[in-house]
Length: 174
Image (cartoon, rainbow, N blue to C red; front, side, top):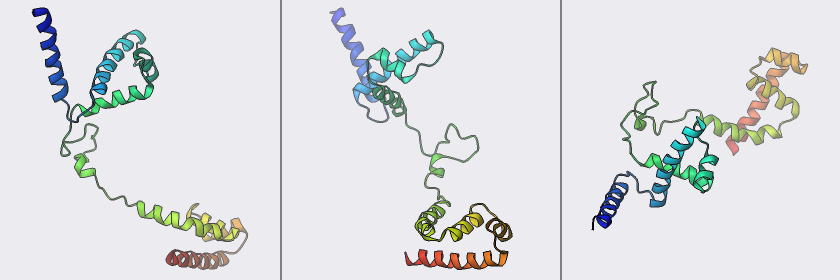
């Protein structure tokens, strides 16, 4: 009886802890793969004197590299963190994860404008497009642009005013 009872009881205890100690329900196959990965990783680290790579782990265990990546990612589901707890890499004092989630990105509006302007800029004559690029992307003054293009600063000013009005009208009509 002890030869039957001991492995059965030990197996049931292991199964209980495996099935109830995870914060997120993870398939049994991945839980077992994670255990095998941990063991294989430790053994390979001893042999190689460095951390093993994903292909090396896949070769030792006889599984695909994708399965190894999945098995390594499963470890993150073992414990759950509160949204109110400070993040471990938070040295700058930015607060909890909940404080940082949903933060409004002020640069997003600029992306929208830039993407809306691309087709309008493509329709401009080459000289006017060059003047816009030099002014707003190369941060050149009107005098510098005039020297670059070979026209007066006053003419650059007029072209900029006219071109910006065209772009503004194009944005409004879209």
